[in-house]
Structure formats: C-alpha cells, structure tokens
Image 1 (cartoon, rainbow, N blue to C red):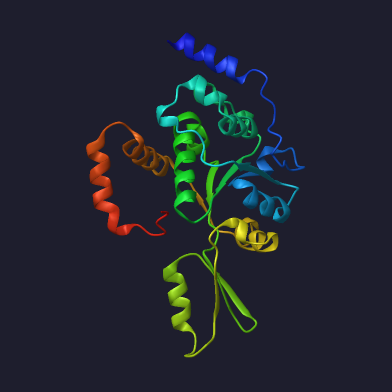
Image 2 (image 1 turned 135 degrees about the vertical axis):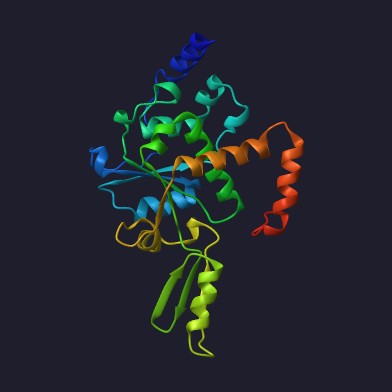
Length: 249
C-alpha cells in the first residue's frame, strides 16, 4: 500500500509547474516573503493591486477546494486548486513535505468574513493539517484578519473587526453623531488601498498564527460535518444552531 501511495504521489507531482494565476513576488529569499491565499478573482485582483510586490505573492483559488475527507491521494493531487497550492507553497506534500523547500515562510489565509469564507478556511486548515503539518508546527501558517466595518464620521474613520467592536465604538461617540457605516461582505468590496492599509500592511495588520490545536479542531469539526457518521453531525447542528450568523440560504 505504501508503494502504491508513493507511486500515485510521484506520478501526480511529475510535471508540476508554478500556477499561472500565481502573482509572485520579486524577492527570492523565502525568509522575507509571504504568500496570500485568497478566494476568487475579485479578492485576488484587489490583493494583487494592493500588495507590496517585493515580498508579497498572491494565489487566488476558484471556489472551495477539494474535500480531502473523502478523496484518495491520487485524486487529490490531480485537483487543479490543490495542485496550485502545493506547487505555489513549494514544500511538497504528505510524508515528503520538507519545510526547507518552502518558497515562502509565511502562508496567509485571507478569506471573506462570511459562511463561504469560513468554510473555505476550514477546508484549507484541514488540508494543511493532514498533508502539510510541518507548515503549522513550524509556525509558517497564518490567518489574515480583514475588518468587518469601516466607521466614518467627519474626517475621522476607523476600521473594526467585529459587531461588538462596532457597538463599543458607536457607544463612545457623542450623542447624535452621524456615522457612515460600511460593512464589507467580501474582500472584493475593498479597494486595493483599503486592503493594504487594513489587512496586508505589516505595520498595521492583525494576523493570527495557526497552531496544531487550532488545525486539529478544524479537522475534527470538518470530519464530523462531512463524514459518514450522522449522529455527531446532528448533535453539532442542534447544539450550535442558535449561534449561526450570516446564514447563507
């Protein structure tokens, strides 16, 4: 079985080249560079225009990546989006993954703050946990934190990252202050300058480093929701139904 797995991996990886949709950076030193994985061409376009081309690369993904929960290794490696991830990151896959071969030392997941974005992020975390685990254990995987709202009144503006932060900001303003509130439904709604200022500029941005416990929780949740055992999935849905926000129906 191990020989079969290695043969499937080798044949699938043969002939891999950097994906055409990758907007690479000019610096070739992995220790100084970072790769942003974004969802869709709209967000990818804003990120490509807003980035610092010297050290920031952009890889847009089309839709949700393959569900690795139910996919054989050879099928997974022949999937266009998975193949793009593997070749762009550069460290290989599964047992042959080698952090010394990484093309970037910071891999950033930058998805929308909605149901689809959360699902895509969970799919990616599950993939990395199962097939590129040293990327996580060695501290190379991060989650970007784009703002949810832009609050503007007069010449003042502030970006906030949650409903509670929005409410606290509004409560601190003088009564009857007129505030223009823009909610970002997706990264594509930000212009390149806004995306750089809030989410990609190392001087201002907020990023979360993923640890193994985070990734394992995502993997376990994904297994429960996408696996074949019905009872745990039903219990999870019943338990968390009241917590649902941004329901996409």
